[in-house]
Length: 361
Image 1 (cartoon, rainbow, N blue to C red):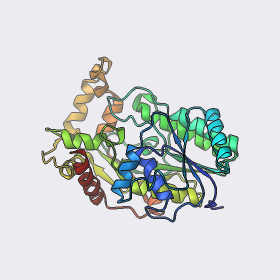
Image 2 (image 1 turned 90 degrees about the vertical axis):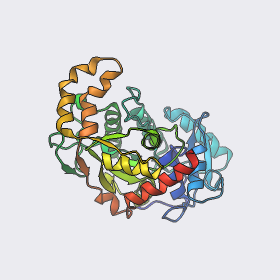
Image 3 (image 1 turned 45 degrees about the vertical axis):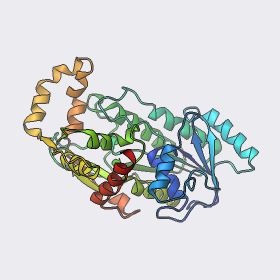
Image 4 (image 1 turned 90 degrees about the horizontal axis):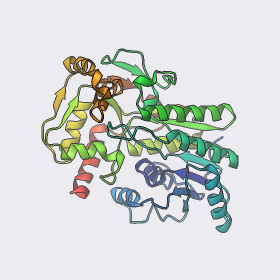
């Protein structure tokens, strides 16, 4: 059963990078026809609309074309508390004579893949509470934005391996997983459990999402480094890359067509050194990237593994850091490509990089 385009839809994370593009997609500003029904967007009292304004500007839209669209409604609530969200949404819908939400797209997440990030995330709690919110409303469908971080192969570190949607190993050792990956695995397990309990779901696993937004925001960390670094360096590891517009299109199409998935959203698998070099050039930094090859640096990091217990410095010598830097795992993104034709990664880099070079200068 496909989505009813007049249903009331609830979105978490619409003030963030991916959420703002999902909202643009739902309003018909990217690749699909717009949603005709009400779109309720969660918003904290402290939330800023700067990302939405930048998304409007990047897409060449008038200010407010997304954030103030006639069928977009902002509901101030705390998505870490399902009952509080239910009360806020119920009151808003009653006051504005709107039907309660029948669909949920959960795009809110804490991103902390950096070694400087906090040790814990609340991604599992957010997903758990959004699922509870959906259950309390007897929703028709729930779409969850997961991550390729939940996937795991079997090849030794440094060797190339291609993995697909079936690669989900929630029993992997915590010693080799970042807190971000652990939170995403726990989140996706909650969604699968809800699906087993009868809730219709779609699960999207994006790779590294390239987009644009305020410089201080976590999704722009790679861009900020590429622009500012006087002596950029990277390893010969690689990761799956995808345009934020493509993830938004994939998520909305999967939601509308009730594609369970998991759907892998990865356009290309790009070596880190190539990625950083191209991003740097796109934002005006022509400094050559120094490459740390797995041979000999991987073994050197293992040798100094005892330093992992040293405050601050230790996080650079953990097993998780070695995996993040030197993994050559590649992700099979064909399932996402069946829903949306991917943009060329070089064009994505140049498009977003050129834009950020102007607005960040």
